[in-house]
Image: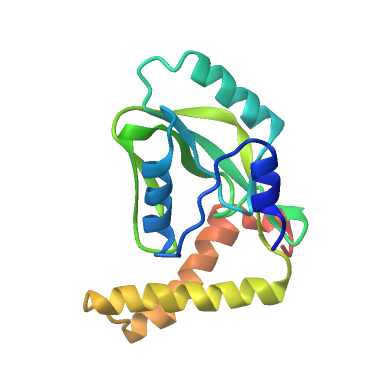
Amino acid sequence: RDRTVEIARGCGARVVQTDWPGHCAQKNRGLDMARGDWVLSLDADEFLSPEAGASIQIALGDPGSASGFSLNRRNIWLGRPLRHGRWYPDTKARVARRPRARWAGADPHDVLEIAGSVRWLSGDIVHHPYRSLAEHLATIDRYTAIHAAELSSRGITARWWDVAGRPPLHFVDAYLLRAGFLDGAA
């Protein structure tokens, strides 16, 4: 709907459109369909900072024994970059030798697992996850439902102390211990 397919094809990209089997399955499908030795995986709401793009180009020019590379992800919340708390640095492995990489984890919180050494690169993956507070809250609702169903399928249920204790502990960790207060109200 946003002309992504048209633009990508216009730039010479091979575009494959498929059903949606879930986050990990879709990303692994992409890995399997990729033709290059190296892959860079970004979500639709992410892009590379110029420094990150340059770091990747330099690293791929001489990767040595590295099987992959990670970068910090800078989250932008309602137009404001978050640089503290649990949202930065949000380090993600996103560049990998294709045969050595697989997506794993519980949907929607997938992780690129890379067999071999992973080196950190400078620059940020810039992430714009939400356009509004309403979208953020709807995403939390959707993701918690997915996560709760996954936990339930494994026989894991919440106890009263999880509900009473985890939110305050998360706040203390993110806002106080990891200095989230430095980002102000955001």
